[in-house]
Amino acid sequence: MQKTVQLLIIVVSFAFITGCGDKEKSVHTLDIMFFTDLPFDLHDHIVSFFEGGTSSHEHQTTDVHMFLPSSEKLTVEMVAGDGDIYIVENSMYPIIFDSVILHPLDSIVDKESLGDNFDQFIEVDENTGKEHLFAIPLDADSPLFEGLNVEHASSFIAVMMKDRPVNEFGLEILGEMYN
Image 1: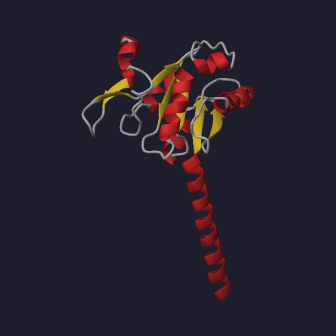
Image 2 (image 1 turned 135 degrees about the vertical axis):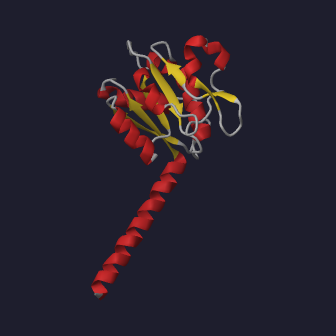
């Protein structure tokens, strides 16, 4: 019985210590999740794009995760809260777009400059009652894909989760991808 209690204390302590380590990582690491049909061998090039940016956040890092476009996997990752920025195929828009959980991206793109084709990315924030842009389009002409020398027929959207310790850094990274 005493050995069982000791083992339980060790397991709980390990879980506590491991949990604290993950929390510390999340404060300094921006997790970018791709749910696209981009080849996985682009992973290192994508990482280099983000590392080569002009970030003023010297203690911040990025982690890039690439997945095939799967609505089930996207839903699991969003519920788990593992990603900060999600880049998804346009067809996955209905799954990812929810202004309650997304951070406004007005500081990156003037919503009027997008035109009527992107009205779907604008919604009223329930907390403030103001209209905001919650997703940005990324296509072959965006700096991200030009920097990768990728010509891709699909269009993508990028969103950022709300209330993350890395949101300021995330806005800077999204700006580098778009502008």
